[in-house]
Image 1 (cartoon, each protein chain N blue to C red):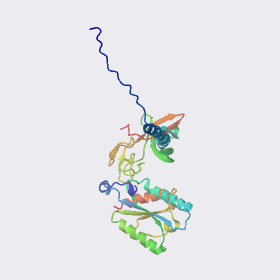
Image 2: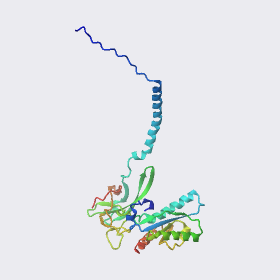
Image 3: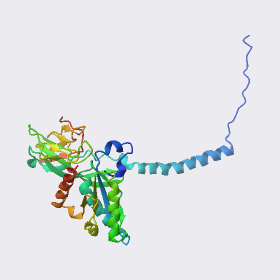
Image 4: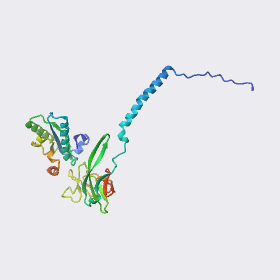
Length: 177
Length: 138
């Protein structure tokens, strides 16, 4: 019994050899992929470069000295570098800056939320102490709350006070009303 | 706003609000060098900005008539004819130009002419007030 030994049939050794055709396909394919892939990688990186740059929109821009800001809203203009893809341009912006009852400085965008005209503080003789849009008579309170026509309050600039100067960032939805 | 910014499905709802057409007149003759063309177009853009930026929600800027190839009388008649046609769509038509010759022309069917004279204050403020007064005529 013990002498019985079930011999496994010998497996024939199979050498998986690469054919000449396969060898050429792999080497030429690999070289080709490398030659196409590397320039492609660099070109894609070049094309999307503006997207990879840090966003400059949120940066604060120096606008006016704190001492010039009053309870009465005043219009101030400032320039910001706008980067749109590869296109860079200094664009002029306007802000209505004033102090609230607690003396806190805040700044509003003059762009009407109806159709984009430019509002003015006391822009109508009929409505004092309000922002008025000359296009379709939209009106807003000092805090930018929409009273008529416009569907939303005036946008607000985030404000930073530093070394006696008012700095403004890019507009955000009004948080005061 | 520019005519090209208006989506086709938006036009009917915006139409009651956008009642003023801006018609830019380039005043080019074809004899200008590329540099002169650039200067002329940049100046025209600046004049256009006087009205287009603050009143974006009420004005529509139409394609410009860039060349003035006719005799003056014919050119005035042609622009007048276009203004007349534009009034089928808009209540008001304002002609905008940075060309000194066109500034002195009279267009009977245009409600107002804005030119490079209005680039700086106090003329700029005056023309903006005039536009607002024009709208009170509705």
